[in-house]
Amino acid sequence: MPVSDLFHKFDTQIFQVSQTIWCVRRPSYLTCSYLVKTDQGVVLIDAGMDSKGQDMLAGLAYISEPVSSVKALLLTHWHNDHAAGAQYLQQKYQIPVYYHPQETPYLTRQTARQGLRGRVSLGLPEWGPFVLAKGLLGEAIPDAVEANVFANEGDQIFNQFEILHTPGHTPGHLAFYYPAEKALFAGDALAVIGQKLRFMARPVTPDLPQARTSILHALDREILLICPGHRKPLHTDVPDQCQQMLHQIQAGEKWPFFG
Ligand SMILES: [Zn+2]
Ligand SMILES: [Zn+2]
Image (tube, rainbow, N blue to C red; front, side, top):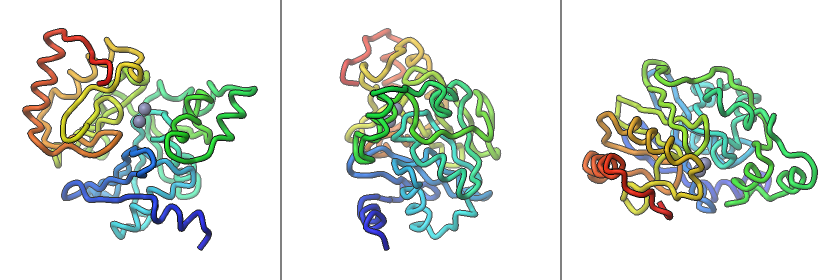
């Protein structure tokens, strides 16, 4: 086994979230990607932080599912800590990739920086916060991925996932509602810190008015579990916490700087 594989073996954390949902994350940055076992196969929510798909492959091994059982990879948004493994998983295993059309320029590298910034971005190590920085500095993910399917507001995927367009953090950000478990995969539209539902920090929310509307939209359904893009899922008092956040937005409270 190559040393890099060994590194990932110990670096990737996998834990069960609910009956059909598992979370995959790296302690070095705590970006959460998810595996969902549906009656039509496994659906991946985000692609992990490893450009060779090792996080998601480790997750599949953990739940004893072959790669061939994966029916789709749904991307919440283009940031590299969520999308790093997408190209590899699509090319190597023919996993269909779904994302919102407005993320296309970043995911296909039309926006990619050339010159020094581009070179520095590609030269950063694939570790911890650098995984996000590679994308932000280069204004695109390093390994371009074309959508097999564009996912738009209101679409249903396999009759299992409702697509919610939730811009604010990025223009084509998506959240996914999974009625089977009343779960919301929120990506970076919401944060969870210590079993508390929180706003994302203001500096990482370029469009606050859109972000407010997106939260109102995403929370407008029965939710018992929130699977965010970072740290860990929220199980505690979810309906109450959602209500509280909705009230804050409806009351026009200022968006907290630290989220
Ligand atoms: Zn992000
Ligand atoms: Zn993120």
